[in-house]
Length: 442
Image 1 (tube, rainbow, N blue to C red):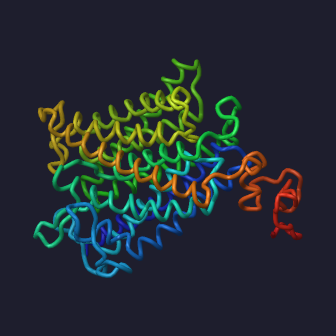
Image 2 (image 1 turned 90 degrees about the horizontal axis):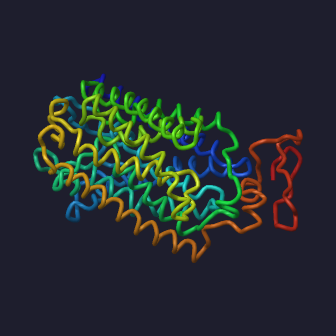
Image 3 (image 1 turned 45 degrees about the horizontal axis):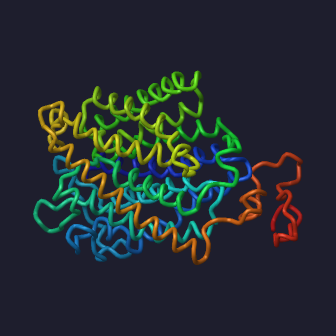
């Protein structure tokens, strides 16, 4: 085992784990005060649900030996069986398979958490939990196999169709994570419908400093997301780290300039959103482009995502926290631009894009990968969301939405302004709320 590479993979796994609570803060600050705890819970519960499913069968479905035409892995790794050996990484260095499994688990956790922003303020908690469990099983685990599971050099294992047959490049999850989550978010936004009063009533973020804190922690954790995907402490990790930095910085500037031109002023929320847009876009490309190309990708994402978030008002779908505008659009931008800015001069495992003499070949491969993941995720998410909505119900009732999901779904409130010892406020007994005992414990 290479101890340096192993340490880097484990640290990177911890950084990516931090991204899920960071996302919870990012989303939590953007919702209204009466919904912030529900938003935090929709994210945090992914750590519990997905981890257990990953242990039982998720790792095998994503990274096990292929069983159906590059579409899904098998069940040889139930209970993480077979993960006590070594995985050979770059330059023949070995890291524990279990370290790799834990690193990839954190990708599986944050992907469905991203979806929750599209349905903020109106989703039932347990309906969301059911959706989350089924979605990662039917959508994320197979798509991760398509994109991240590579054929073994000795032919002992066979991987996914996009990575090995089509040769779509995705270093850290532009397709499997961001396009996947963005398409699912669009589907659920359509199933659940608009929030009460949207778009006429203002639904401003209740805590912008919390949004910026969440975005900053996401940026910090994203170094594990991107540079950690090298699976070694080497030059590829350094390239991914550098591109992550310059792309995010350029995206912040691109978003703010777009706001200045369009609205007459730059905003803090725009800076935070621009950073996330840049992080999303550089994710698939971070190890396949030179730093100037990385900055160009970030700038494009900052401008295009800033423009895309306004489309929901024109098209009439209520994507509460801009999952579609940032993650779907940003993921598509980053995935496609590998076919423009990619160069084997920085990574021989990549491909030359349009600007480096590669023609349109890689651009076509990238487009096919993006379209396949988008279509698969959207259709299955739409069907799954519709089934849940028609059976147990996915959306809270009108009174709960007006009073606040935090009080009705969780018997809690995030903030106490009256010094009530943490007791839930304004929970009418007529609505079936639990009696509240002294000390705020229902």
